[in-house]
Image (cartoon, rainbow, N blue to C red; front, side, top):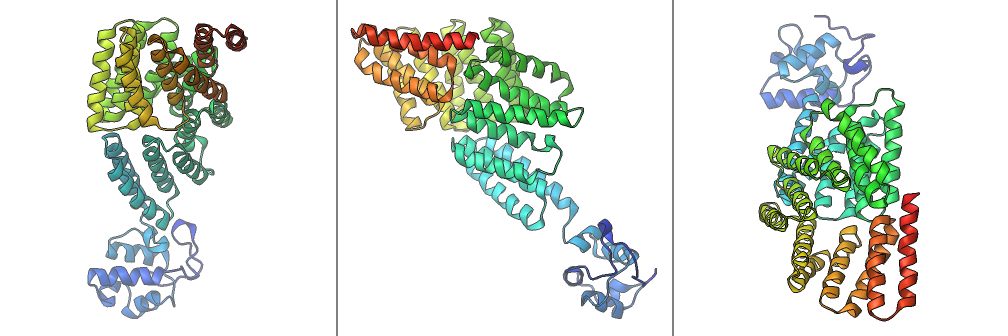
Length: 447
């Protein structure tokens, strides 16, 4: 081998004719760690003196010398030059995947600890993708705890790290950030974020089908809640058309849960139930108990819409039992609200109110769409108990939340309930005003 180092290009295109920062120290540390002498490291092509010069940064090795040293030290040449092991990036990504699986199995604290370690290591070694993946994982932990602002901050940081990457690299972070806007009643913002990303994906030519499916899947719910039923249907159809090209069970399950909402609206109840059952099965294949519970909740809700109260209650209670292994405050709230609706459908308003009150206690002062739903359910229980005066302020609070969120369908429905309550209280003029607001909202949705 040639000892000359003049005019060579080092690993990764770095010119080795100049000093490579930290190279000598890395070689010395690895050599000492292996118990090798300079002579043993040099043999059979080089001298101990030459190795000494390299370790003291008085000489820069040629490419051939780098390869020799890397082989003797049992590492890659890239690690010697940059201080980073390229396999470490893959190991960190796998560690993040393991932590996310741990999160979905119900161990949020353990997942958070593992993700924190991954984030620290990724930052130290400047692996941007692994750092972004760890941040997304921490965002999922915060999302599970319904800490929407912390989750959003993590997803935004992940997006920023991936700004120079192809747009599909940040699709996961973008869709998750949009969901935090959806959960904090910012429907228009969620829609804007997702539609903007669709444009970015389209600008590169042939968009990645998995990324497109993700975005369309996440658009369904905010479109639906905002009253844009045609857009929700179109998004569901486009995602469904992409389904044969996508093989990731997580994204396919997400699509089926959201698409079921549109199918139910269109009266295709059998197809909706089939989609939800497939989502639940996919999540169980992944071992994601929390997501399987979400699918079970959706199945139970669909059963209620079908008028099958027994199946609805059985499904809700099974989902509640599932959450014992994978606790989630927000999912527990949804089940309690659902059990309240089931009890109310059975003309058992006091039992219904107990479920709804427990859900309200878990939500505290959270201003999410789930909170608005909870307030409306509590109000309807009081209506059934012949206590319209207690129902009125609850419906007004729910109406205000829906108004702020731009949730047109729910706003119109809640306005109708409030108008009925005001009529029962003998305030017909106020009732007419509220009815008009609801009717105006329906007319706007039709346009």
